[in-house]
Image 1: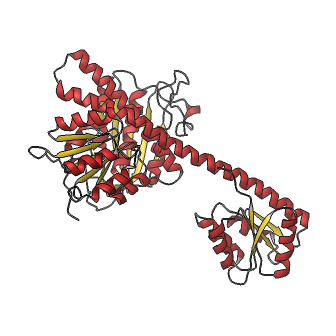
Image 2: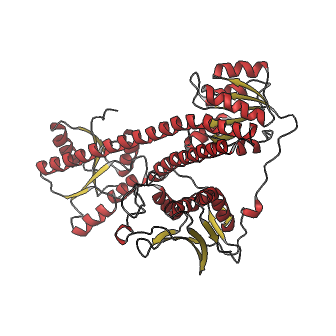
Image 3: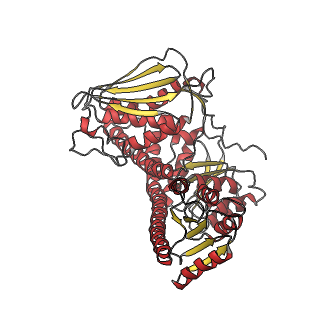
Length: 506
């Protein structure tokens, strides 16, 4: 994306001063527009997005420092650089106040033309670099989203195939069951890596949405332990849970808190030898709870203690034999805990002495948890005879394995490999539910859903998106288009079996 020609907004209520500055800048080959008040400046900034605003402090309607604060507080104009000037506020304290309020530089009047030009050019160079960095950041986010989608597409049929094998041949020889388990384990690891990458990107842009509620911490611990049980069993490690004497309620996102504990438990297992011991020990301190995850593994060297929560840091304390993973798990865990007004810390007496990671969260006093281990809702049974389901995906392997999976679950399934084919099949044999991909080649999944909703005999069908895109924007677009449920590939057979495909009437 080529950078646009720099545009400067010159704001001053004094006609002569404004004219003089504009003349200096235009004679230097710069493009300048003008405003005579703070209100006009704010409106032009939002409309035209200038590169730099030359802003006088003493304006007739809004104080110049307040104008600057509003510009920096508005996401639409926060990136615009501001050079403030004043002939009235010429004390060092005024300059400090302006810079603290968001100004990028501050000059006292009178200003020599050469000094003005030098400062403007310096800020324009800074703006160019910042624009280039924003563009790189935007392309990075686009790359990660596409990468995640392209990685999830091959993972989906692989997971489907394993589920089909497990369902059709549960009594296979031990060697085959071990091979399936190995494939499943590494598939899960790949999915976690992709999810972690996207979560880090969302966190860096404040786009990670939390679903907050009052939740039972015991349920969070139980879910995390269940998710990591296989890892401990494979390494023959003992996991001890100190009982929680009372119900502990925290205000948070249950899925994200489970993600934090799963990360820490996997980390403890990874750096603990076969046959080692890991303990989860809660501790109540005043109005907060501390969860200690203690292991007798390789420990941490004192000089590396400050590094382990850094982005892309490898937690291998020995400094060699690089472990698998991207080195973002602990950094992600810390960010998620901090979003819950909590803290996470690590302690080790040294190499060979094990480690202790502590998550501290505020407790909700006198609250009743909305969920937890004892309030799990069991999956609804599939209705007798199943449902008529249309699977739509232009990836033949995904479509065919999803068809077989849904048939194993008792449904009657038709497959379409394009949006156009899906519309034809739906009109000829109306489905009760549609499982569709978003990234179809001939039309988007959003367009397909809108078109299906216009067919009388399909209008009330239950629409499920199974997509490799996992952004909140993708999900919102799908819901607005008419999707009832948004699932991210690869979808587990357990989740598919829990769907009853009932759509409440509008």
